[in-house]
Length: 145
Image (cartoon, rainbow, N blue to C red; front, top):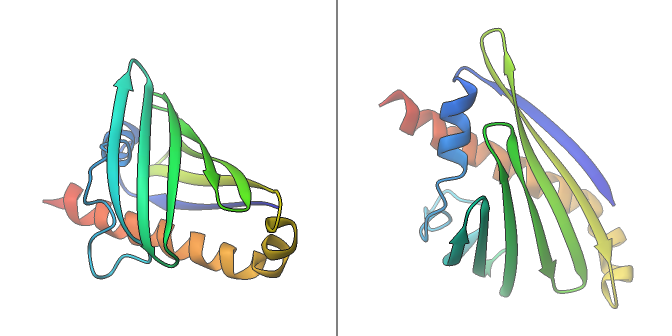
């Protein structure tokens, strides 16, 4: 399953990249966040970051993620979810009045995921859109102050 979505924000690309890649342990602890998780930053090396997210919402899972930064253009993430290997990327493209933020995701089901991923595809896309919009709203608050 593949999907892509984008939004345009009124902030310069460098500021968007800096905000989006400032990984914090409380990134998903806000009550308004679609996800509820604790993020552990395992290590950083050059343009790579290894994270572990322990989610309780929307489902209790632990996800190990390998992030490769490509400043200021974006970053990619390779993650192993229960039932699927997921690769997603955020791209930040300058626009005349801000930055286009694009999320591209590629979900490769395995095991039981071969049944569940197609059944939950529409929900997954809606969830990704809610999560993207949530983070964009948080970024707008932070960058306007």
